Amino acid sequence: MTVVESEKRKEYWKDITCKFPFETLFPIVESTINLEIFEWDWDFISDHKLLPTDIRTLNQFREKINWTVLTEAYAIKQKFNPDSWDNGKQWFSNVDRYLKQFEDYWNWQVLSKNENINYNRLLLQKYKTENWDWDYLTEFGGFLTKQRRDKENVNYLEQLVKQFPKIKFDILSKRKDIKIDSSLIPSTKDSRPYFLNSL
Image 1 (cartoon, helix red, strand yellow):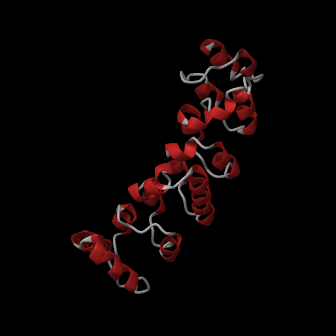
Image 2 (cartoon, helix red, strand yellow; image 1 turned 120 degrees about the vertical axis):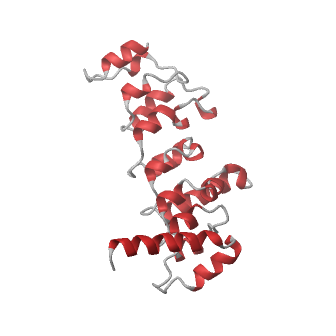
């Protein structure tokens, strides 16, 4: 098959995939999963707000799903939203289960931008060896802001910097929502000017 024919076929399947109502489409996709002749548009399916996101379904289609698209899709944002669960404990337990189950599939760079994830220190600690976007987490991550548990702890930021060594000092120093104490000035010569300018 020529490249032109391949591209035409791709476009053809894109058109077919989006023409069906999703409630009609998805059962057909399920029943044709093992038939190579069906080349569904998995970018479209992965991004659809009605895509079932239960673990069984994601497991079934894990090799077909576009995980970068799914990671920032509405359906997953809802799944990772604390408001979708009865309480914080249930939210953490379920999000942790999803992160663990598909650890090798998530786009962790994209996941870094999910504010419900980047606020939670326990999740970031548990998965800190993953490929997070530390520039983004340092600049916008909610985990660095003072939280309820830090009320009596004046050294909370210093402890976080030790706990998460990939925090970028030059970026951190520019944040306006965090009070940076002079004791946090790193000893490395390269980082010191950024901190001195920010204090």
